[in-house]
Length: 390
Image (cartoon, rainbow, N blue to C red):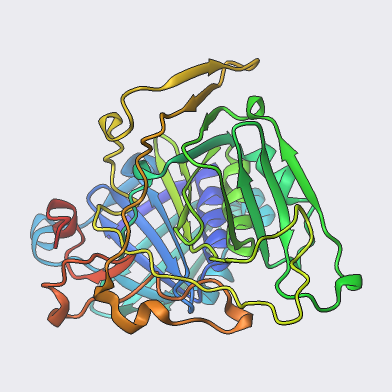
């Protein structure tokens, strides 16, 4: 594989590396016919991110000879820290780097990244990689009853009001408002915490579709990177979600790139006030369940309009954004079966309240399992797209 980036494309690629560094410690580099995919998953298996750059994004994109494309697909796994160190100072890269070339050398198991800078200076970096199975996420965003779409700047301004140390935030949605507030587990040290809550009218969004009133709690750290990436390119961010405990998907789409971040959400049976945690002597610890969805991946291009309810009420907003209220028979995410066994009853420690069961590697013995999972490993990524039922 060999690809070349020039100009602003080098900075955009570096922004993607920065966003992925907030997800996990490992980076999957997957050259494909439809583009170069960068993926990462966190150690708790509760967050997944994928940045797909189409061949049009590059000045040159080549997978090699025809025989190599047909018989040898390389999936490289790198340490994210080694790649991040090359793109750490984006301002310096934008100022000095004129062209960046990325190539994969299979005989030496190395990824070669070259920066062609001003004044004829060339910097060459050789990174060792481990050949690994492809990482794939399974999530049907078009089945989510709630969808909002807004400029990245708007969402970034909302997130900016929360401190950097804030771990989880709660997103609530009703027909009249979209709220965002910080989340603290337990009732200790109430005097030391600052509770912040803000809300927006549906007119503020480019697209507002609600099928069920809900509140979801998810990690904020993984989201900040995607918002920064989208804001740098002035792209809107779409949010697909449903009930608490089901994954939430943040996505960015453009003609030459796609970005997706899938986060686990928290199940909390306790009723919370608008900005205060439950004050109980023995608070019930929140529990998470695995969201097994027997559908295509979150990168699939099947967002068919016929999958949504046929009857919808359109209410025009002051900014021309459609507000969609589906009828009572809303299409919800399918419920999981009991095939996951005892794994569904597993809980995570307080330091890792977000569910760690959303991702699971499928071994060869599990090929007959009819229950798909949110992420899996596959030698042939395209096979799963053609046969989503496993």
